[in-house]
Image (tube, rainbow, N blue to C red; front, side, top):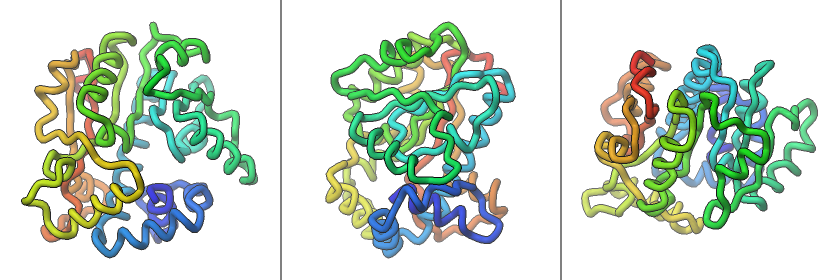
Length: 270
């Protein structure tokens, strides 16, 4: 579904984001799911475009500033390794073995897709040590890196989210950057204050077998406790104003944000 939205947004006139492989990866099932979601959240396509573009821009800035290792945690159908490739920069994709195998089979059918753009690292996050697997694949922990954790944290229980945040802060070069998106606790916990449209969206996700479990209303205490000293967050409306020049008060889909974080305060001017 996410790939379908990314592909649909890329096919728009004057697109905010650009992913030429997304619709092919999404297939008819992803397209159908995105159309079903449209009925409850007409702003979802815009959010996916904004999220993709902002993370792409943040990754590009990280590379421009000398970061030479990019890690996509829970990569899914992400194609940044191909879209943002640059000489001397290594991309690592970590994901469940079955998911990664399916993705690689799909990509092998696309003309012109650079399968060697990423180092694929199969990882069962519930049982495997992702840090050790990264090192075995050639990753250097003593060098600044950029970690992209997109569309993942809210499906974890809080203890698992905290554990990963702590490891990313303590076991890698402190000059590394983490990019992740999060949603508020009302959405994660099915608060009675949810609008009917939001509740219907959450029910679709629950039905697909990946219920939302963890919400963050104020990320500052969480990130401080996990070892971070730099944090910037950006909202749906801020991104819409930045990339589309518009602000529309009655747009739906305002429960999700994106954070940039680092254990080092040296990135404070990011």
